[in-house]
Image (cartoon, rainbow, N blue to C red):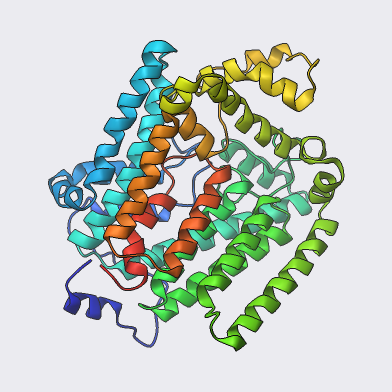
Length: 452
């Protein structure tokens, strides 16, 4: 990342770490965009953001602008991440097959490719700001801590407005959020705090895709910041569960806790191993208790995911429909339907998917067909979206270059392996290409164990 002397100076740990910020470390005015992007990381579901499929973030656009303003430094970043910057050319080439043989929808195609660009902008911004400009990473961590504590406070205010029936507060947040979950009559499942996220199910993406890896990164560099990140994660996760934000945060927390225990446990040490296995046992008992106490989980267990919960049923349907179309069209399974053409896959897979989910004699309601437009179709899974648009070839190449990058950086360790598994899990129910988990993994994994 930097030379050894600079690293030693930057990673030294004084007695205290103020969470406030007196002044920002900048080399030019464009750096303010980076700090704004960090401050707005949790703000991805408001009407202030620019639409991407199923979320309205602000930070990816700021990171793209930051990268553009620092275009002179891009060649230095490009040399290290050349394969990733060339990868979109493959996606365009794969998409051309679907564009010529199926359809071409300009706006959804642009959204999809901009999502890829947003991920690359996040990767490039880290390289420009930290590796090249040597901006103070402590200030970045402070801004992130403040931003997510503020997001949690927003969720508490939303929760209190729901429980105390403070109408004007609920109405204000209802108008602020692009797709609101706060009012009782919300079409998406109301009376739930959603913080500043596009929906409550994205809580785990932020806690365990962004904050947890940063905590791992800080463990050997700054124990105080690592502890503050840990405290934030615990409070945010526990608060979300207590306030009834949703089912997914319960599942995400369980998975993340198992992985975190594995990362921190030396299983060759019998005492640590016994403690870990004992913790897993307590978690299993707690999981059963939560399942019995949570009405949505009880309904899913009693009636199955299709009948027990509308949200789960919708997710299964949204994921299954394009996959059915891919199976029916082997060429598209390999090459994809093309960027922006998820709607075409849905149109070709809806009848078969509806029959699988609702019985062979069930007919697809007219409103289902009417709802299939190029600009409103979503899958809620990055795997489904990516393979539908770019095929198995695009997906296999992406996984290969990520694994190859980690190998070339000599970054394989238990932490990196567990982080990779956690990343793979998180994207099962999140389709935003521009989200920060994968860029953070690519850029940070060599640094988790102190390698640069």
